Amino acid sequence: MSSGPRRFAALAATVIVMLAVSGCTAAGEESSEEGAASAPATLQVSLTEFAITPSMIHAPQGRALTFEVTNEGTAPHTFAVDTGEGVQATAEIQPAESATLEVSALRAGTYETFCTISGHREAGMVGSLMVQQGGVAAAGSTGSMGATGGTVSTQEMLDGHEAGVAAFPAETEGYGNEPLEPTIENGMKVFDLTATEVSWETSPGVFVDAMAYNGTVPGPEIRVHQGDHVLIVVHNDMTQPTIMHFHGLTVPNDMDGVPFITQDPIPPGGFFVYEFEVVDPPGMYVYHSHFNSTEQVGKGLYGAFFVQPKADDWGSLYGTDIAVEHTMFLGDGPTGFVLNGKEFPATQPIVATLGDNVLIHLSNDGSQIHPMHLHGYHFQVVAEDGFVLDHANRYMADTLAVAPGQRFDILVEAEYPGVWAYHCHILPHVEGPHGMYGMVTALIVQ
Image (tube, rainbow, N blue to C red; front, side):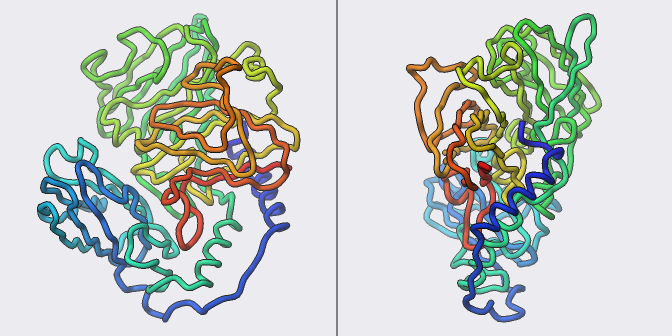
């Protein structure tokens, strides 16, 4: 794999050197007037059945927030923000009417937005408010709000874009997708996972309330082989019940992890032992919570479960040598728009040498579709939902829409040197007036 803290310093140095070759600076207008940073930021929100638009609202840290909310649906709705110290909400807004919600300045982080009317939240009227340092402009705001108020100047836009690129890959605390080594007991592979509530750094200085397996988002990678007998011991150190589901895997019914259908939830302080034989073919599968899953999976309770090919040789499945293997989870919601639990510029690049074949395992454990686009390359889609595609069914693409719950394997032949952006192509998930954020990383070919 190309992720993990072991390679971080080397990757950062590589990126800085390569970006310096093509770096640029620009002069422009002076920043806005001093003192305007305290002016409220105004954000536009619309409500329909059953959605909040934008689903991710971006706002600057240190500014009071004014939400101008319009009900464009056919039923009454409200708009609420959970600030972490309480819920602030509008009164019921009738169809075609509007209301204003004033919220005091919030610290950097991600906050939940939702409709308070019974059943509407469960039906999908939930979103996120991301408060970022440095006055990052807000999607849906009136005008482009600058670091010091008013509209963003040309120079502020240039500086913001350049600063984000220069910081990539920014170091943050904690990395997911690290291998989890089993213990062997009576010939069985035993994996221990503990669910906890943590403060997770998604980008430098931005911490969100998250839920993690073994302290990381995503959780550690479980790698087994067809025919293995496995035990997965799930400990619950959270303040709410949880459960585990093995997404895409064939398991006995009583190991399926659905509350009150196949098992009782695991209470706080409790544990449950999942036991099964691996019968599925080699491929990427997922483990994740299936209790209060909108919150628990949205906050990070997911991880990769790989059924490895013989001799751990993925090239034997795809008919080519694999030099670089990379796992990428797409996430959205309470943690923000994240790749492997991180937002640009803290996302980790995929680093290859000219001529390498790069295998990327993609999984979407968010709640939205994310069309992932790779600059400069066409890649080959070679597997879907853990199933290797026949050669006749493989196809080339440069953008691949990954729906919630889907997994794909894609192959990239690293034939063009340089730093190539790789990002979700829903643009509010990746870029604003102050530069790139969210679901952006890069393929670096040396």
